[in-house]
Length: 129
Picture 1: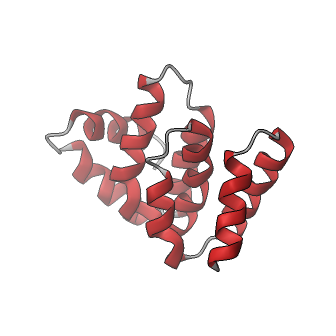
Picture 2: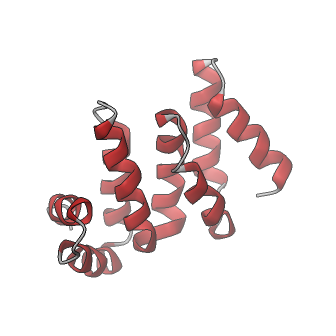
């Protein structure tokens, strides 16, 4: 995605117009490419849960199982902030449904990680593989 388009979508997602936020999130999900993965991963560190959740959907599609560790960290941050993470949960489930083979392998690896965030979330997400 070109920089102008990327910047416009992110600005709209960060805005206060809910309809525009949702629309921009849908465009981000539909237009993101593999080359956008580094920028999407940066969005997972954003202070706004709306931005983090908007990044989770395209990452599920174009990032695949390789981005599960970063997604788990952002996912846990949402819980730590008192959020229900419904949209993020759906994106994670979508990821394993889109990439079943590589996801199962990565989740088994993360389940055996020394990181408790990875362990707990990998165990939960394995239920969907």
